[in-house]
Image (cartoon, rainbow, N blue to C red; front, side, top):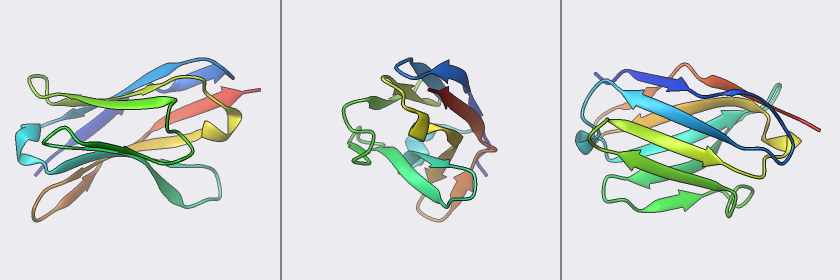
Length: 115
């Protein structure tokens, strides 16, 4: 069982930055992929970025060049640095952990970007 807790969301003006954190209750060495997703009001949950336990990163086209995902294995934490934020980045951001046998989600953290 892996418990995930996101933090770092908030209200920011367009062009600003936020850093989200996802703290895992277990060693992230055992987690194949850690990812960030977001869900805008009335819309489906969309993938934003992911990082493998080997450090390979991938990004959605809409955030490439603006967002950076990273991991601190010693702290069992994954981060999402978000720069040049746009109003369309607004939503609840969720952390996801994928192991060989299970998928775990955090409760989410709200990000609101004002224009």
